[in-house]
Picture 1 (tube, rainbow, N blue to C red):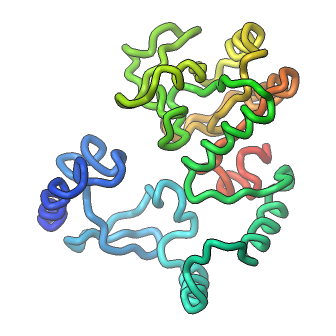
Picture 2 (picture 1 turned 120 degrees about the horizontal axis):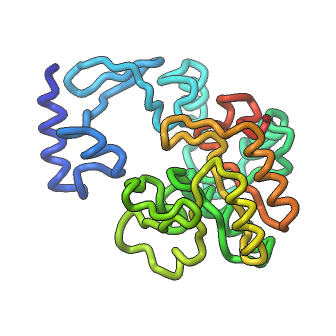
Length: 262
């Protein structure tokens, strides 16, 4: 396969952008010896700068749910471009989209939009802490919730670094995450409801909430054990804790109402 143009672009990019990419997930070692630079996409296919064709299983990490250049999406974007691209004020589309989300996801009472999954989970943790008056959050090993300090912990830990199953080590993804932030997070293995119950029994008066991917996408589509999500819901209800489902990947996919529909 000819990927010479991708190689040339990567070499140029490394002189301009740290590691040659704007997200670590786009570069080495995920792509070896270097990333492929995409030129365009249509439907389920993408094409790199060298003209090679690929089936796009990445789908922009889930954002391209309808495929590339879907005619209805393309036409809607074209019509909006004629009206303007960004206003910094309220817009009628906010109301229309919020109404549609409420119809599709009946459990949603209100909608707040964010520009990224990182901003959404960061806001959700703040709401949980503000609502409960407590500071600590339970997150699970291997779950990815964005690029802010509170959740860049133990999302790709090496098994040799994990420590005890009943009290795993908190492994920051990189230097730069302050120790006081690590102390507000409780890391646990996923799919172990008994362990969650034991930890909450000991520390429930400190825990504001639990954040989880209802289906563990970052670790290869690992499904919850039967009754696990229901058990988390009950634990949170009984202990004045907020349950946060991060459905960036599962929302509108496993069902219109996401994994929460189950």
